Image (cartoon, rainbow, N blue to C red):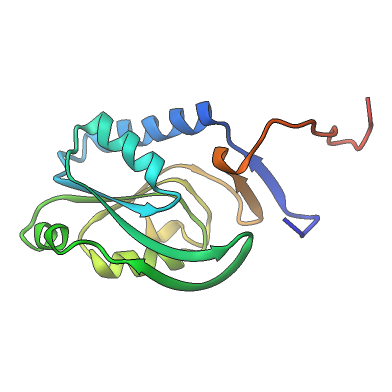
Amino acid sequence: MSDPNQKSFPVTWDQFHRDSRALAWRLATMGPFDAVVAIARGGLVPAAIVARELNIRTVETVAVKSYDHQNKGGIQVLKEISQSVRDLAVSGAKVLIVDDLVDTGSTARVVREMLPNAHFATVYAKPKGREMVDTFITEVSQDTWIFFPWDLDVAYVAPISGGTD
C-alpha cells in the first residue's frame, strides 16, 4: 500500500467467516447449486464455507493470478476448471463461482468466460468490478486495500490522528 491516500480495511478471521456465512445465507434462496468453483487463492476459504453451509459436495478450483503482491499485473490462468465441472455447466446444472473480492473485474471477466452461465459471488466488491458479480456482501471504495486475515499478524497500530497516546 504505497499510496498515502489509499484506505486500508483489515478483516479478521472472525469477520471473514461471518461475511462468508452471510454470503451463503444470501445464496441459499438461489440454489440448490450443483457445484462451486473457488477462484484460488482468495476464494478458497469463502468457497469452503459456502459449500459447507449450502451442502455443495462438488468443489472445484480455478487458479488465476492477477496480483503480484500489491501490484496489479496481467491475468494468467494457472489452472483451468475441470472438464467435468464444465460439462455440468453445459448440461444446465447450477454452478456457483466464489471469490473473496472483485476489484477491477479483470479476474472475474476471465473466469466468467469459462463458465458464462454460472452465478458469480464474492464476499467484497469494489465499484469497478461490481458489474461482474451477481451477489456480494460488502462494497468498499475503489481506493481501499483489503487486508485479509491471511495477510495479517497482530501488531500495534498508531491512532488515526497520528498521536502516540
